[in-house]
Length: 513
Image (cartoon, rainbow, N blue to C red):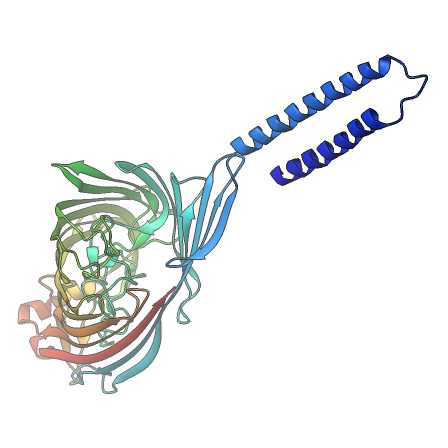
């Protein structure tokens, strides 16, 4: 527009110059009238007005915000656009994440059906991510789509955040529930190892192998009676989340909080038709030492979102945070299991609540995540019968960059009791089930534990790295007393005890672009 005005102005000036020259230097006609000078003066006045109008248009055009649209790559393909008319700013980013893994497991043959070892190439994750802001920086959106070959296309996350004030932000849509484990909240693409521990899940859904008990799972870990058989996590749901970061005691983001109201634990996109009750969650993070290296990729927001494992940022100032989490949920289900483990129909209420505490530390390439969680599940198929079951777990994740931002050594330990104080009756009525041993007898799942030793090499941070580890997965299986066996119509001779030991080797390549 501005160039066109300049061109018109120049052509008009040239034209008027020719007119003036012609008028002044043309042969004077003998019958020229005095009015010619008046016409020339009027024409000059019109020219001045036109020139003033052009200058006004030029100033008006210069005062408008310039249109800005650019496409570039920075941890994903980005498009930034600024609307010249309204001044709104739009940001868009598209990312693809791939995790390709090989796993070999030497199975313990004491478990029924586990005589064959496991070996597999697995597309652990294949995901699309879209995020940005619209119509301005106060509104952020995020969409996360699952595309693994073993699973159907599924929208894991889809939410919008109003974030005009960092002290009070509103998030609504489908998202992870911040009510139990921090390990699950730490992104699957920001793990300093091949996967999470059994504190959360088994990551591939095949351990513990069969033997009558369900495997550890993330999604779909709620049985028909409402009892959770996975790790210590609430998974995802639809709802609303309030959160913010508060400055206090001369420290930035000293206190972080999340308050959630969701459909329920591990729910999909369908309506909750059985009950009007919902799940409530709360999480508070205290940054005792909110230090960081401003040159590192974590910048000045080391524990701003608690999503990353390890100290890839190589913090020059110690960073320490304690995170407290809790949730409470009530629901109404249609199924329960009797003392024989058979599924029965009876509409009744269930209640589930729990607590989690985590300590996170980062300093000079060293990282430490220590976490403990406990939860309780209550069901009452009728007023005369109420069952209460407890679960608890702990984990430790220790990492150290012996070559900053390139080579990291990792040790992980996790302990999980899916049913504390387990008995044959508890196993059957909860839905966890009894363990079928290779010798034809039954066992009671007591506890699980995992030892992991691994090494990671980062080509370009979490955008591209390779990791491998060796794990020992143990499950303690106990027998039953005569009294415990009699509760389910069996004898102590029908049970046996064994320590299940499964060895696993994994190597994984991650490409996130």
